[in-house]
Length: 363
View: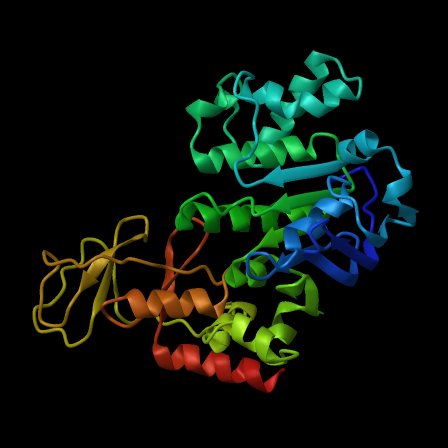
């Protein structure tokens, strides 16, 4: 757990106008609560990155105040302020000539830690963000893009800052790695409880990560700030409604836990049990460890396996993941597994619909 108290970030009437008259941010009033993830989202040129950079004084407001806790950041020493704020950017921004452990230990050394202490701290942080200890002596070019981003997060956390600023940190990696990094950040946040301000142009990412989402539009106007469920169900205006996308109902499924989905064992065939040639329903064949090996279509044999492409975990995932599993299954059935990928049971479209209807009545 973090030892440094978190801090609220507050914008009071903040504007940024450049010399050519361009208005980047227009009279922004916003509170980013302590210990929560606030996501700035909007189209290119809407002022979200400018707003983020005014928090650590990389950009100076033309008007208004930015407060860290109750302190106006304009009265704080800029270098000292930045040392107490973690900052993660798109390209990770690692020093190419330093090893991974020395990249992570950069700020602790600047703050007075010995190199040995900084490297020990780096080892602890590497474990926390899911990096293998064997990577400590490698250089950034020897790591994948996703691994570099994990190093960037570890480095940002090295001084145990109260605030973590993240400017489109996952946008340069492929979609699968990006999803893994999002889940890793959510897991990490349950441990560290930082005040996180996160910039993205991707509304799906915002919905996944945000405790609250601030929607900006061009001209630096804050159009709406609310939790993701409220934005999906009650957009403030046509701009927000359009920006949230045409599949708002599907996004809403991300807020329904999958732990109540009815599961059935019918159709699960254990390893070593031959599938009858005259069977009338799809069969999911599992191995000796109860892990899925593939599907057998009605009337076919177990030599004609079709891939089980996607599963879901009822203890962790939402209905959206279960529906994805069912839609990608040749049998039209979702496959539920535990943390060891062992099959717990199957769920039909009707089972998923039952859970969705129950969730809607509880809203």
